[in-house]
Image 1 (cartoon, rainbow, N blue to C red):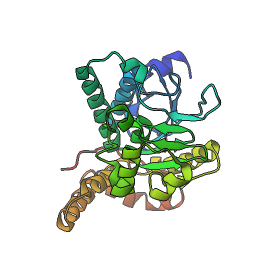
Image 2 (cartoon, one colour):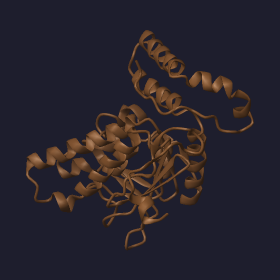
Image 3 (tube, rainbow, N blue to C red):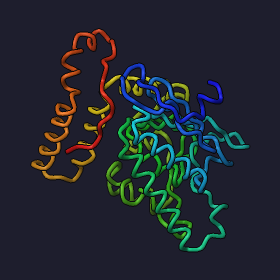
Length: 298
């Protein structure tokens, strides 16, 4: 890809398998290595000493969030192949403590609010987000996983929330969201003790969904899942995700009403008609000419 293609703000009329109007390329961030192919955005974490989360990395994630919200990707794969100087595999080792050492209390609170906001945006993004972890994922690294839709771990991953040992608590989802995935008892154990857990233990308690033998195997599995999603109607995928997330904690009646709204949104936007007309070619494994992403439910 030449320099003009990487940096141009032009748009192309369609993705090969969706027919949706999208930006031609993801934003060129300072720290995140991004590639887009057939609707799948691959993000390789490769910054700082240990992919730690500082202001620059946070700004990059804000730009990526905006790109995804605009329909720039149907699926996202986030991973890291980095290792420390000692050879320890890395995912995200936490926040950039060195950068924040001289911050005032107000600066700390502002930064964590930004973290919380960007993770909430990623969680609600109209795309399927898979994290592939085969390294250290501590603090913000574990919290980042909570914004993903599916999590795959390799054998060398380690997870943990060490914040209470630093006089704070997990402030970007570790306190408010972790319990809904692993249960209250396990969330209290991780947050109060700061204990680091293995890939096998993370899988057992539900923090991750699959364990594979290597990073390469995890990436292959993530690619398979991402390509499956990228061939589907972007509006239907976004409506399904929004309906599921909005149903959490609701009554049975409210959940049914949310489902009805999401379903009728797919009909009203024309996606259901496209699917009916293209039924035979979809069964044959050929992509349908889906319309552009329409994510806002009535």
